[in-house]
Length: 369
Image (tube, rainbow, N blue to C red):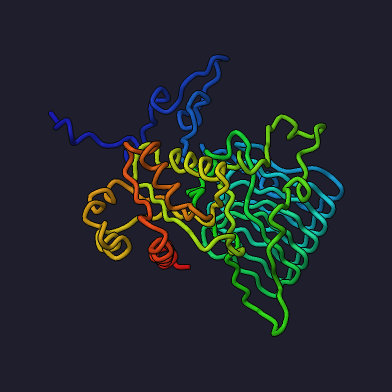
């Protein structure tokens, strides 16, 4: 009487395996090895489930005399390339990671918010509207750009460059700014750095203050795929506030107006801009930055104690408004319109310039400008 576990394997004993253990019968009555069972689903891995990406969906190459681009949701934060296009109208109504534009001639281009860099290389006679974190050109001639740039725009080996403030609206644009991680209040469009200056010459200048975007980049052709996009280039509707930037100020009196973080900070800042411009004052510059307690004490000095607790709630939004009588006008608006909102307003015109310089110098250092 043997032990159960001492039973010899069929392979060693030369015995045959039971076919029922290694085969099965399919619906047609055929014997199929278990390892090749037609009903057994192949193993899937996570990379097998990814949607296949066609690189051509993220490129525009070699186009001539056409209207082209991408609608909202087509790029969805991916990189994009535009190259070797001539006499085209190109519209990217979406947010993206980065965009390069190479070897393009005589094109009109709109680029929705770009989380990283926009890089023009070897381009000529380009008119464009661009919103991005970083803007750079190399070996370019005659670019006219309506720009929103969170950092200092850089040109290199480029000539005939002209810049204006971003002015554009379409219904999804505010969401695209948010998706790209860009603030509509951080726009250094006129603070250009030329890596390759030429003594006695200017490689860049500012566009005339009354320049209209549509004179440079027309609205999409009504027969194109972009005909349903409801755009506006009216400065009062622009997602990015229209600022005077580095142009000469019309008055020696400026006022610093700061909104501390709250649920309606952006809306309140836009409301103030509307109120101020309707009364003839001019928006010079804006910034949205985070502050630490020591920053508050250095920037706001005697008013700091009342403001320190508010900076923990989020970044502040600051505006410089300019015009004769602007300080008193801003104080009146603060009391009548924003009485329930935490704000800082320059106290008098004798110290307001110091307020402006103190805050925006801090903001520029904070942002590495």
